[in-house]
Length: 351
Image (cartoon, rainbow, N blue to C red):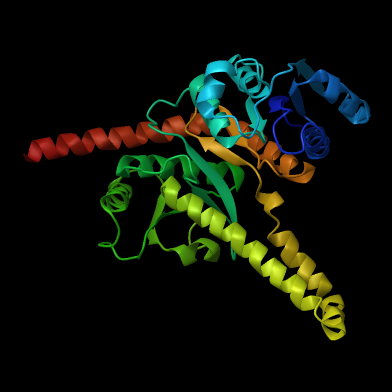
């Protein structure tokens, strides 16, 4: 039986909070009965919801606060005046050791700012990165950064590669994930200085990782590699493009199958196969983006998700805690640092 784990929850974060949050906790409890929860938010709204879920009695503890972060609040404003909000208190519970990780469906920018300020960065990491999962032909692929950093140096991308590799091992259960750097071509001479520099470092490093090389946009959904590394500008565009494409084709299919009586009959015949496709591409299954590089586990759920999606975000946080994600990151960074020192000494000696 798994050891008890406590996760802090921003119960007021998200478009449909706190109802969606409490129902998400209930669904997560079915799969993760060993997990306990600290729910931060308005007790007057949360307690009646918990009373309808007797199975959560003894599992959840409500920490009352009347303040919360809205989707319109600016991160700078939250940093100045938001210390009593449900989001801030939920993150702070991780620093205090009351929780092993935090999950919120609230304002992304505010959550990143608060988490970075409260949790701080892991030693050796310059910037945090947002990592998420993509469905592919081969299963699932981790991609980072998805929007935290518009511009990145070669060193940033190398750090993202290390963090993404450990994330894939912890969440996807892969023994040796393959790493690829997203580029405009697979040739070594393609791309800007940052991607070429990152690729050179990853090829020459002594890290126990499997570096594939450059990958292109069509390689993401093909599942060519298990971890796709890119800057936040490119990653966010790729994410939004993929989400938009799924909605685009879903709309076309609905229109096509409803266009005639024969088309409707065709839908009835193909319904089972279409249901499999729908389940496979359901974004709720991949909900839960991790803020990698922080000195603590912080998971961002999509603001518009439902209870099923939020439960999956909780699962991501629990998986990272269970696999000692941050401890493994520290060890990998130590190896990388040793390699950089050895390379510098070798260059100096040859000079």
